[in-house]
Image (cartoon, rainbow, N blue to C red):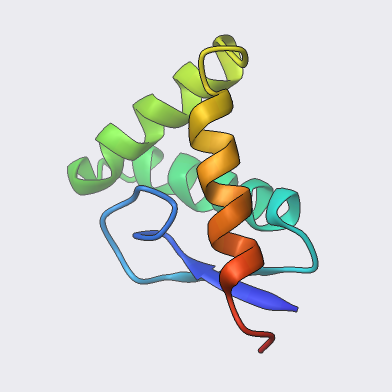
Length: 78
Protein backbone atom coordinates (compact mmCIF):
# COMPACT_ATOMS: atom_id res chain seq x y z
CA UNK A 1 0.00 0.00 0.00
CA UNK A 2 1.26 3.46 -0.92
CA UNK A 3 -0.14 6.95 -0.44
CA UNK A 4 -0.11 9.91 -2.81
CA UNK A 5 -1.58 13.27 -1.94
CA UNK A 6 -3.99 15.31 -3.96
CA UNK A 7 -1.10 17.76 -4.49
CA UNK A 8 1.18 15.01 -5.86
CA UNK A 9 -1.57 14.14 -8.34
CA UNK A 10 -1.92 17.76 -9.46
CA UNK A 11 -4.49 19.03 -6.96
CA UNK A 12 -4.26 21.81 -4.38
CA UNK A 13 -4.35 19.95 -1.04
CA UNK A 14 -2.61 17.28 0.98
CA UNK A 15 -5.48 14.79 1.30
CA UNK A 16 -3.95 11.32 1.00
CA UNK A 17 -5.16 8.66 -1.40
CA UNK A 18 -4.05 5.07 -0.83
CA UNK A 19 -3.79 2.12 -3.14
CA UNK A 20 -1.86 -0.95 -4.15
CA UNK A 21 -1.25 0.46 -7.63
CA UNK A 22 -0.97 3.88 -9.24
CA UNK A 23 -4.32 3.22 -10.91
CA UNK A 24 -5.92 2.65 -7.49
CA UNK A 25 -4.61 5.98 -6.24
CA UNK A 26 -5.63 7.86 -9.37
CA UNK A 27 -9.16 6.43 -9.14
CA UNK A 28 -9.28 7.26 -5.42
CA UNK A 29 -8.80 10.93 -6.25
CA UNK A 30 -11.84 11.06 -8.51
CA UNK A 31 -14.59 11.13 -5.87
CA UNK A 32 -13.01 13.78 -3.62
CA UNK A 33 -12.58 16.02 -6.66
CA UNK A 34 -16.20 15.47 -7.64
CA UNK A 35 -17.31 16.20 -4.08
CA UNK A 36 -15.23 19.38 -3.95
CA UNK A 37 -16.76 20.58 -7.21
CA UNK A 38 -20.29 19.91 -5.92
CA UNK A 39 -19.48 21.78 -2.71
CA UNK A 40 -18.34 24.79 -4.73
CA UNK A 41 -14.68 24.46 -3.67
CA UNK A 42 -13.02 26.56 -6.34
CA UNK A 43 -9.50 25.62 -5.22
CA UNK A 44 -10.06 22.10 -6.56
CA UNK A 45 -11.78 23.18 -9.78
CA UNK A 46 -8.64 23.31 -11.96
CA UNK A 47 -7.69 19.77 -10.86
CA UNK A 48 -11.25 18.60 -11.52
CA UNK A 49 -11.21 20.17 -14.99
CA UNK A 50 -7.87 18.51 -15.75
CA UNK A 51 -9.24 15.16 -14.55
CA UNK A 52 -12.25 15.51 -16.85
CA UNK A 53 -9.93 16.32 -19.73
CA UNK A 54 -7.81 13.24 -19.07
CA UNK A 55 -10.89 10.98 -19.23
CA UNK A 56 -12.06 12.64 -22.45
CA UNK A 57 -8.64 12.60 -24.14
CA UNK A 58 -6.72 9.63 -22.78
CA UNK A 59 -4.08 9.58 -25.55
CA UNK A 60 -3.10 13.19 -24.82
CA UNK A 61 -2.87 12.32 -21.12
CA UNK A 62 -0.33 9.53 -21.43
CA UNK A 63 2.52 11.79 -20.33
CA UNK A 64 0.71 12.70 -17.10
CA UNK A 65 -0.15 9.05 -16.54
CA UNK A 66 3.44 7.92 -17.03
CA UNK A 67 4.63 10.62 -14.61
CA UNK A 68 2.12 9.51 -11.97
CA UNK A 69 2.93 5.83 -12.33
CA UNK A 70 6.64 6.60 -11.97
CA UNK A 71 6.02 8.86 -8.96
CA UNK A 72 3.96 6.07 -7.40
CA UNK A 73 6.69 3.50 -8.09
CA UNK A 74 9.27 5.78 -6.44
CA UNK A 75 7.26 6.05 -3.19
CA UNK A 76 8.07 3.90 -0.19
CA UNK A 77 5.46 1.47 1.06
CA UNK A 78 3.23 2.83 3.85
